[in-house]
Length: 256
Image (cartoon, rainbow, N blue to C red; front, side, top):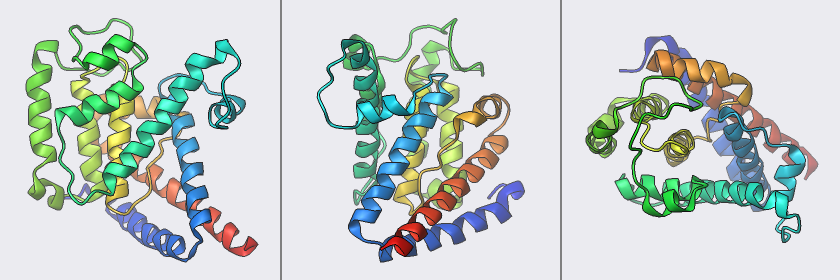
């Protein structure tokens, strides 16, 4: 059953998504490519902001201009930003596959892209402790419960009846909420959650629901307090992305 508090908004998302799909069909390949490029940059900027990491526009430009990095001080940041873009591109490739199966290896593949510690990226092990210093302050699973919780989550993700019983926005919200409660990786869990969350939305014909960095406190509170609060924020974010895409495509149409 859909959450009653967002039924009307979900219908609005569906109508807007159809309008944007129609505009994308009418747009040129270059315009669609440019739209996805803008969405990717926006997603990375806000995703880093949600993790409490400020990225400047010039840093984003420098990371994605395809030129060799000449400033050694910028190399770690640029490498991490490019890995983030690679994760987003991978998520879109997976979203377009005929069959989608969720596995532990899929989560570890995204962890490897996001992890800044080479050893953690390579071994993909779940955390062994409750971290004392972390960005998120909600209750998370004890380390000895992570593996079993992930197995249950993956089983749920692969259940077609569950997917059909919920609106895609509410389905990805439920995944997001459950995954963040498990929090299998210290450094990368938030980014993995939002990447897979948006991968599924794209697969279902929507655009990424980019939660803005300005909503960071509200986002953290939603994860800590209730799935319903997170569903409302997700729905608003999905609408905002669709509104921005619609304006972008209409401007491109007028300019062509």
